[in-house]
Image 1: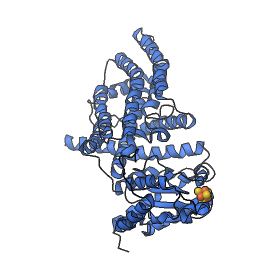
Image 2: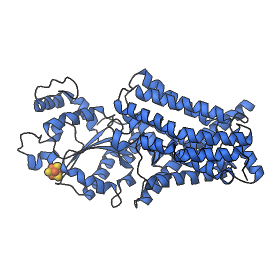
Image 3: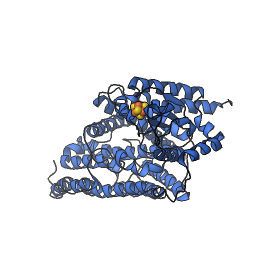
Image 4: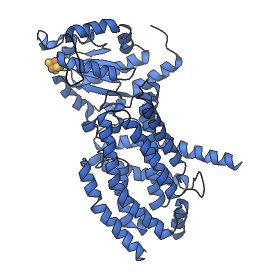
Length: 178
Length: 299
Ligand code: SF4
């Protein structure tokens, strides 16, 4: 791993204490997010909060299964986020397809398509597991280990190949009429 | 020598707005959290948020966008340096309400221009809503403030503060109806519920801010803090009698807390409901206050 400068280290401290997340709620796992945000588990205590737009977000939460059609949106969304950005795969569907492992329309492993920094196992993970994962991610950011965004740039060709293979021949006219 | 002193005072005002603005915002988040029975983030969370956004690498959307962001921040900083913080006045004698009202639009227009320059439809909708809302709260607010200026026969804010000190009575007692109208307008200026329609994160993806990444977001957060500082400072100066620097900050904090608490328990108006509301209740009250003042019924 390349050495971080002092400024990068300070910046990483700041980044780990203020994480804005964009939750891409496709799967059922998303119902665990409201309890993690509201009074019982109170995610804002850690400086985290939901953000409405990818431009401002630091974390992309993929909460569950992704169909091939939503995959394209997720990729658009990820590429719109500002560096450094982190991806959390949420629930077993993002790890190996979960109960949809043999479905014709969903993808099985998220990290073929996007650089996942952290997975949360479970179907679905409880709020405790989610907060635990956020703590781990903060720790990783402070240590400079959460660099999926660099991996994505370095291995862009490989990711692109995988994305294209899943999406098939893509002719995009514009975002709404593909 | 005087130039140096002025520079020192301007720096003082800007630093106060930066430090206390962000601190009070952090405390406001904590208060909202407590109302919702949560623990809430630490009071310095907003400092971390701003500095974090400044460390990230964002995108520009063309020179109109860049220019708009700079114009917004610059315009608001220019306005701020004319606002008296109690007895801390950066340019004594020049702290005229009309100067502030005039300069304030530079910031707002810069924001509108830059955000529309991103080309994102949500941004345009957000800006349109912000300007529509402005049409709502500005009218009653300006009626009340002009009434005040008419009563004191001056546009100078420091003189109004002094007049209150000499009368030994704050304007909130002297003009209770006007103060109420100004308070309702303040809620809209701050963009707090029930007048939160321009931002509306759940509906139009935070409106004007939708395309702001990283550094730009940080600058606009600062601008927002400064804008809130100006708006509340004006209320404190006009209606709560200004006071020395620390008394001023205390009054500021009370007004801010009140606004936060109101916003924490209310839902949101739709934009046309908000304007319709402003153009019925507050505008009538504002006219009532103006009527009283013109007839000399002030005690
Ligand atoms: S992991 Fe389970 S809870 Fe999560 S999306 Fe898949 S099926 Fe739903």
